[in-house]
Image 1: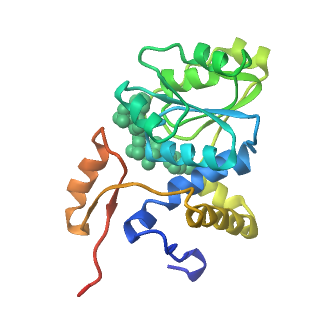
Image 2: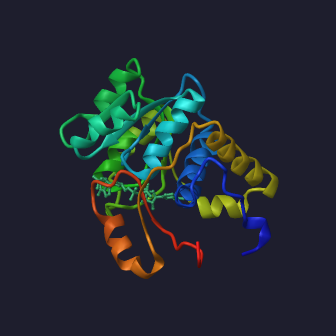
Length: 231
Ligand SMILES: NC(=O)c1ccc[n+]([C@@H]2O[C@H](COP(=O)([O-])OP(=O)(O)OC[C@H]3O[C@@H](n4cnc5c(N)ncnc54)[C@H](OP(=O)(O)O)[C@@H]3O)[C@@H](O)[C@H]2O)c1
């Protein structure tokens, strides 16, 4: 591993929590702060809000003071996310997501939306945007194209774009990447970011770990962790 890519584990975190930190917490920081530049007065809508990344975004919204509307597909996740402190949780199975997003933003719609699902869910995220709003599509969990009404895009002058952390890391000046990594570490040290681990598995049980990671109802990341020999 090149030394420049190594970051010390923050003292607050176990090794398993550190394993659950980087991709999702750095992604929420970069999407919300570096790309969308959200601040107080802005409202973000996120789909798949019960994902590990979604839970990280709930922590970031609280720490940075921007509004957040969470969308999940299973009603049982609504109370779970409320218990984590999420003020607004909508269930796409039985609620009109764009209509409720407008109600919650004084009739305007949300500043920005992020969606890792695609298909109908991605379209709901785009339809929730206010004029000049931006949607970041960053995953394709449904493996379906997003049906977008061109009328929505043109009359509201919306922006729909992709986001991939790997590409952002490659094209961003190293000092800005270091600052973003430092900001994530700062939020870990302050207690604002606490990655949740559902279960760890030794490397030899990688197949069981992958099955667990694919199963619904997890409350945290699944982490591969081999204790050092003798320890
Ligand atoms: N582009 C990037 O740079 C980047 C960076 C980080 C993560 N990601 C992507 O972000 C996504 C979330 O990552 P994660 O580690 O947080 O995942 P995760 O913890 O495994 O959670 C996946 C979530 O997606 C939901 N989901 C799965 N299929 C769905 C569907 N067809 N419709 C609606 N919801 C669906 C699941 O809901 P249920 O609980 O109801 O099953 C679950 O809440 C992944 O797609 C990952 O690839 C992308």
